Length: 377
Image (cartoon, rainbow, N blue to C red; front, top):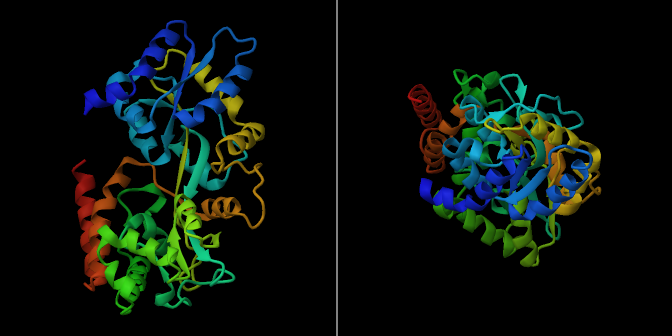
């Protein structure tokens, strides 16, 4: 694994080693982001006694190599917010040393860990209510008012189901405290029964979607063939839906029954400073330079990814406006290391619920496993 990762980022390492010798700052990003950062670097470099240079590196390969490569890798790189806590605890990333302003509350919270800001948010996404505008003129006010035969969601996967828990009064970690888990409280149990009611409705696609391994494909097939009017999915699915000839609309996911907002799990990725950089001040100066409405708009213009900067204007009624609104209303995925222990046990619990087992028992067992796994970290 280490050998494979090292090869994957070897070009970045070679570039970084040469640039760092002169205390230059190297930005390592995916190929499609290189033009954006190259343009910013050219403007930033004017009048500086060091230079910012840009090279290509795959985000997850770079992050996986970071513990061993440390200072021999890019000074600035991209990180998803749910990795921040673990990287900060290992001192592999540094705080930005400036307060980010003018960004959504969700992305601002995503960038913070243990009272410090570690990331300049660049793009954000979440799940959406995607609907066939030829079959459903406007999104419903609640999910419960839709007939189970008319929509689908992959509620065997906590990424898709998390918002259902939050809408009913559940929570993952209270105040980001991993000792206070709310995935088996009264609200979470209510959410579990809501999901169970769909799987036990007798509707064919919900019955087939009890199997998590095929659930996503069944959901997409039914929607793209026009058999159902709506699904819960992410922006990444829109292109395939449009290719299938569906007149797709997008909106933030409605509440389950009107008692609470559907807070879909929201991910934000952004730029951070290498904890082993030889020019941390220079790296921070570049991030502060980039943290403006002008460059947030430039990001959206060049990448078409949703910036969480409040100064970026998305056309009313557009899919991009729906994505921005949904991320603004969503719940940032916790960035503490303990969050990684939630996925597996909740996957098991949700599968049991989908198959008709006891909701309360499944969730309580899932939470017990999460607690055990956290203690064992």
